[in-house]
Image: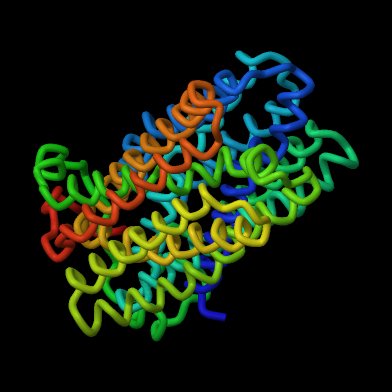
Length: 416
């Protein structure tokens, strides 16, 4: 087994755990809200607390990875967030849940920029989009497994056990990662000269990020705006979708545990295919046309499917449209992150952190905004239609991004 494939496997495991942890609160929502009499607005703020912290600290922790090393930063991130996931199981009041979720988001901030930095450092240029596909497919696998695994666990042992188990898994991953993986391919025990040649020149570590030059890139701001608008789409699925299936779709809790997972399983396939297709389109049409056209088309189609979902009545139609809406949206994830890495270059951790911060801000407005629109209208369909419109707007902005124009960002030093 090539050493870079071992690294990719561990990256995929952490991505899977990330989504298990992130979606766990949505899966146990009916039980928690019922036990503590939490309103829709209060629940929206509990959900958004994670997103606020994640957004605020995403850029600083992405930049830390650029400067101090992605591997060590991932160990710290996993230990911190796992501690507060476990502590969530002991919460009893709205403010305790908000505090635990905020600290969880603070700990998880920077995880995907640093994972992306690892892939940029360890993967040959021709494998980066497909490795992003594996990264995000693993995350969606975690999202798909969350209802299937956590609902039975909750029913058997209570919702507290869900958070305790997930916290323990995070600690285990950190122990394995810190022991097995080195910061640079050239430092990895057992790696062959042939594999080092395949990986190619390793991006160097920075003395510091030139923030002014990074933020002066119009293309970076454009992709950031596009990804920020996109954020409303996945965060509907991460936060409100399980409850939406019960309240609007008429599904039971047991049925929700099955059907809430289907969009994420389709997302696994979509991300793997999207990574391969992104590499092929970039090779044939260039990165600008290949990536931008794919992102735009996927998001426009996804918005259409979500609009149709808001009007669906039959359960089979709800299952099909919700799965297609998420699956088509996920086809563009590998190329979106590859676009940002191409723009950011050696400051890719900082660039992708900026982009992902915007996504989480979009998620913040989705999570609490959904609750407010629901309370104002009494309808679960009205906020979903707003989300669909925002996703379609994201596709239009993505069509304008030229990722062939790199942001020159900083002075660097060779790895030692």
